[in-house]
Image (cartoon, rainbow, N blue to C red):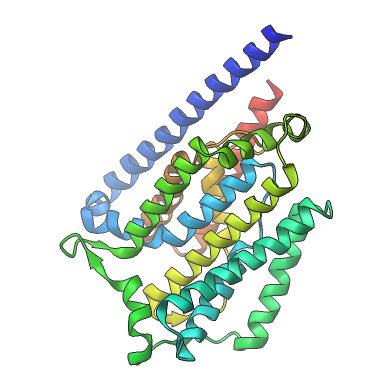
Length: 325
């Protein structure tokens, strides 16, 4: 029995190394192809643009990575991002201090994650259907609230809020949201690797029954996963509204798909129990370099949807092949 377990662990380590090689190989191929077509693709300004436009999905991808490692998917994150951004902007509009408005946005994300987490962990509801249902509820509420119309945030009252998304640091070379995203990636990568709760998520995703027997509170871990996902989605939504200086009701429509694609391309296993926050970052880069490259060569926007769909299809297909082996 011990020998079989050792062989299983060794096999998963080999698969993990192979996944990393494939991720970096895809990234290199993208860079070679698009650089050969547009010499400015690898310029600093374009690379910074890729990082900046990827911030929202980059943060959401962390939450998706955590949920997928734990054995679930969160489809509500896009609308949670939109909802949180709207609530934070309205709080500023009503005269709330900057810190309070940000806390309001985070509370929206945490509350949404709490609802999803309680439904999945306590009521035993299917995570896919539950979060899809929440996504539809939030979409309807946002439309009733805004009538689907964006609003520009102009005036002195919005300046402290908008400045966070538009401030340039490090000698004016990097926009603040990029720094925020990188710092959050580092924090969550360390958390998942070294904190007891982070390590427990891997165990729960790999085998929740064994995790329960070993003394892990599986229900609380699952609740935490969805609340973390909601928190990160809210952060993403607020940074979008800060950067664009506008209240965008449906800005997060495709965030869930792109976040899931990024996590899977980064090697996070659909069956749970395996994944890396650091590799998810490179998955995000693959998705956004692809989008940026297609724009640079003059492809219409809808080709991005096709490309991301194909990327997600290939990632799932590759994992399915490995599971059969």
